[in-house]
Image (cartoon, rainbow, N blue to C red; front, top):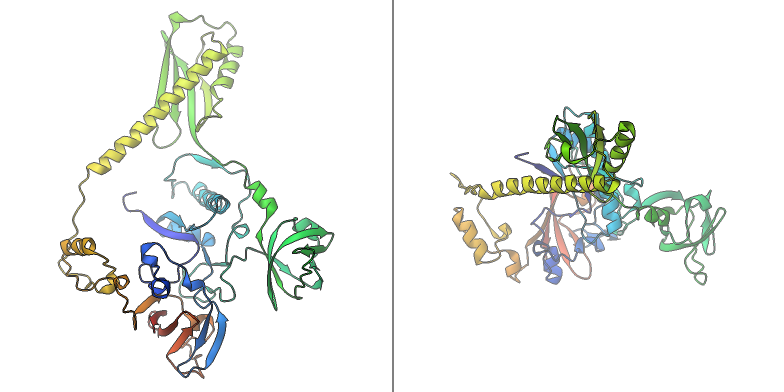
Length: 463
């Protein structure tokens, strides 16, 4: 694919446009543009109007849900997306294993259903021995985030933490736990749960007896509130399933045929590359097996034993005679076939890699400069300035991180709109009883909000 179209499909969302966030630097000197974001978007804020009146307080106004576009994979493929990107900063191995396996299975189903329309860019088939579930590993609940047009329902205002899998609501409580129908079939001792009600409780399941779920330590006697929503962010049974090994295997075909003078053992990849290897055995050097049926069975059985390799094979015997070989000799032929095939695959890959290196990069030139680089072009040092100059740009301002003069600086540009999420959209005439500008405020910062209704977005300025 000469021009790959990449698109994020899953994971935590950065609330700001990429490269246009200076909030972490303004608050604590750690710039997201330099890879050290302290995630102040996950902090609590109060929303005030220009007269200081509180509209909402102690909410995570800049915290978004996690992206999940698994229901739109067909649409994305139809649009030409060929690289699906999964965000995974600070995530564990279980998260990676579960999420990647889920999308691998989902995309394979679409490709298999329409083989004339789509083909796989990766080689080999992944064997997944568990049932992937996106709700069972880290998530702040999900959003497609404007994939099908501007929409609300992207916020995670109540908490920036992982909620996980929604299980239901608590109808009845007792000191130290709650009742839940068929609890012994739903929960395991040690599960991590998050109870969201009049008060929020994060705890572990201590034990389960019938419909009774005991939480926290025995001495705590935690009292959850009725009608609390139950989220499970650690599922021990599922985590045990994730320990099963995932394998990616390349399908090959091994055939045995003959000429007048030789037996030919031939292995070939069963994909578009058709990479192959072969071993020839002189007929005069071996005795011909008298029992062809027995020799064929032994040959097929031993040539197909590829468990310790990256291959799985279909074996075909299309020969009217076979050499009388010991099992160890057949195994050695198989080993040599696979070894030569692996060498040929790597050689083919290396040749393509070298061909790409030999291509000279094309210098980009502009008849008319597409923009004038101001401080938001993120030119941080003289090397970056020199790069821009070679492209024809005159740089007069360096990135905001090079200065401590941040007053009035736009520290974030985002598609997220607080008013839209609060059902106070100005375009719909719902914003009333407050005077602009609005501010976000906490003990660390005061931010001025500018709502760009034309593009349905928001700019945030440091005060």
